[in-house]
Length: 461
Image 1 (tube, rainbow, N blue to C red):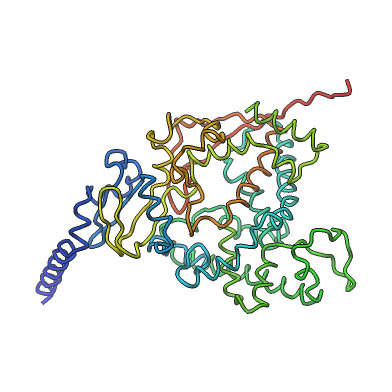
Image 2: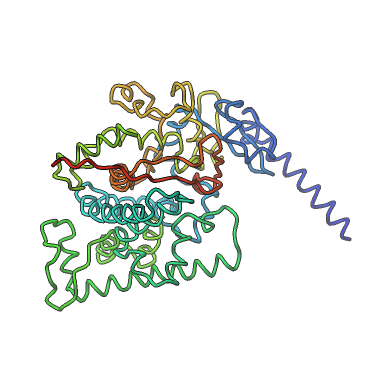
């Protein structure tokens, strides 16, 4: 009986396999060059050999990987192909169906609600927090005086994530108890929680604690605004209020955060508490440069401000070039809403399409000497004639990264004080760098960096 059942299942699988491969969609997919399933993990490396499109079959499901800017534009520039593929389901347990994972009407609604939050005038209010955390990081490095930071990713993350928590939720990790810090830091540092491999009961337990923490912060924030009669929600975009202004009811005024903006939306009936939690969880996840920073500081009376950040064009180009070589999202995915004619092939509706950002960023047809770090690639005259879809660190089109301006501000605000105070010397070199791809691109091993304090010359001497 068991043997008969197994044979029957095998026969069904063969019939279904024939059906999938020989109906319209299967025939169109099979016109595209392909590779064996076992090379799935190597798809980004072999895209050079199968330039600029290839497909693989995983059981009955075809996947198509593309990397030519014209093909990327055909997908990303369309308002129809905005649904992300099943690969992103790994994030649902962590962030629910927030802006990064939702689709259809919910995604459109969330995008419209959140877009004003990233207006330049709003982001200015967060710059002070970013500089404070950078100053804390600088002080910490000065204490170790040129010693080697054994894991630069984790070290920097501690301070950038403090800034992220404070700007999104109005709460710094430094304000949490030891237990909460132990739970929150691995989550926020893109550790095992973002792995593509489920971790079973342990992951479920930690996620429950994390979501409980987020819900607690939201409840406390709502209570704060109730006790202050929504005074600061009404003035969310008013930057003229004095920072040390006292409350009439005797509680110290809290800094406004992105969470407060979401609370405003909930008061207007646009979001529920679960909606708010989803979005909070989603947010949370050279000498020439030094001369530029030092000169800008002198012009700005030795103060790190928004104005100073706008006066650092070379640092801006360096960050953009780093994002070209190592985009945080090396591959993104979409489900085609309808048949799409790419350069060489017609890809049918319903296909999972992977857009190889890492590959197009290193394509020699658009980036001469692509492995070389050259910030001048982003000079205005160089950008002018470059294909707009050959550089996609924040994606593009209707579903581009809504927080890209904030991300650039955070990077510049955290990096500028470091460059002003330290020379960075590598201990581990790029030739030995091993990269792994989970949800984001990250090193497969700790990266060691030596921070050497810069000797400042006293101008009064």
